[in-house]
Length: 215
Image 1 (spheres, helix red, strand yellow):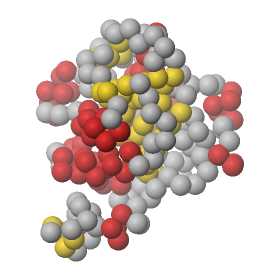
Image 2: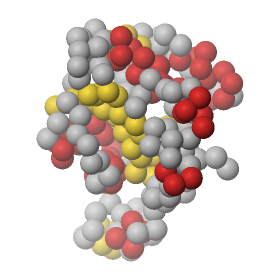
Image 3: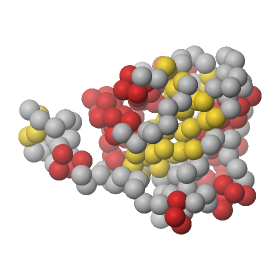
Image 4: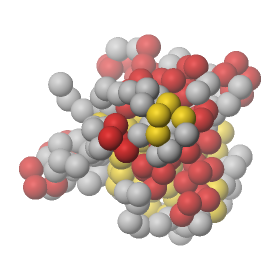
């Protein structure tokens, strides 16, 4: 038995209790199957119809809102790694179509050395184990130590990520799921998906813990 990280009530349910789990902002409303943003009747949104991204689908467990935003930040910036498994399990429960392989959003080696871990890789490890899908490591590299996307205005994020990844493995004919913690503009996953396409991947899914929604 341990105190729930959200409400403090002692519980055997996990890092947070069942009562708090039921209140988390799950992404249950109608949304575009490609980018994950709200859309009428879960149809493909106008933006994706006009400019189709390099990835084919997005699966997100939550909206990036309180308290999920604080849980993600606690993992990423405070090293609260005990939260990873329960967060990953919430995402795993939403997956209906399995890929050939999973990869994690890469960190640049300098950023990895600074932080000490890649939260996306930890999430991907848990997902791979739960779903019995192989996790590929060292397949794609972040070749540029880009500025954190969250620190930049939206209009500068595309330029920041341009040419940031390289994939060194032949992925011809494969369905790849990319695991990341948060999708905001989708630019990071879009740039990685381009590299995966160049490596031969024919289907790319984005699996993210949380999707930032319009205000």
